[in-house]
Image (tube, rainbow, N blue to C red; front, side):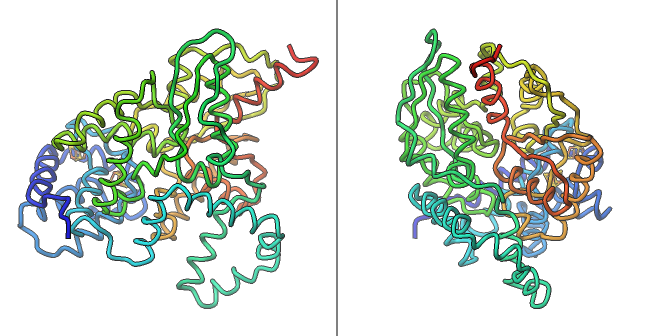
Length: 442
Ligand code: SF4
Ligand code: SF4
């Protein structure tokens, strides 16, 4: 069997990262799992000490350490506040990979992660979702309450299925982006450059209308847009589940496709993809084959709002009136990439938006990869708090830039009977352009 991780090297990396911790405890104030439990082992500081103990061989109970690593949301709020540069979220992922030997041992998870490697699999997911919605089956399942009843009676797999079903959007989803979008979208107006659009897996399967809007925004702002339909997953689900092998395979494909592509930027509208693309160069810095192309990929990677704000967007021509709109920071946008003000500024400058700030906007909504399935109760507690704060904000629209957050927030608002439209920021901005050019528009 191919060994892609060097356990000694990885253990040294974990110990080195953990050694930066001076145990000041500042991170405890922002950690969602510590806030819920008050337990040190559920805090960044406590976790980091455990990872270190395992890495230097002081603690041989792998299961305790693995549980601590999986209880972490990898929301990275602790990384934003830590004055010593400790990265407890990233250390959690490295610890998962190291203790699992670079692969997950759960058969269903392995199957899921394998599917993420193949672009066509996400098209199949999209086709299945379209069939589920258009056949009326989704309406029947939700209306009959059958699944909910089975879940509450039998729990186990039925509860997992019910949670997964409840996360699916109610609004009609669009056909997969990969199948309907050209490889090349020409710029409009004066030419400003050429960018690649990195198509995310879940964005393609569930939020393709948002990604189509992102490409449209880039073109309207003077950029030629290159879309490579053979793009695979960025690897985020793999590294989240400790599948270092799968992560490396996908990184190698990203390096091959994008490593020497002649573009000015690689733009993504998925927070998780953006965080991964920016991390790849650092993660594979010692890899003789991947270091150079991935350093370039990381240097070129940009989030859609980050890029549009940097480029300076063209007038939309919209006039309003603005709808009360608020914004949820995706952890992997705000904490992992430091992109917090750009999406807000785009919203605040939009005449169709009356912006209201969301209390605790940068706190995790509980989605966190598959945390909402693996840690259902904790995830639901975090979501309930978030939805309550959305209610208090008085917003009619809730914007976000990550598919996991969009799914989680939409389900949470629906469950709470809150009539809030959950939308990707690209759709909100494109609407402003469409209104601006409509007959009678400004
Ligand atoms: S991780 Fe950072 S903030 Fe938390 S205790 Fe250690 S040094 Fe302090
Ligand atoms: S990443 Fe989030 S959940 Fe994990 S230790 Fe840091 S603040 Fe807590």
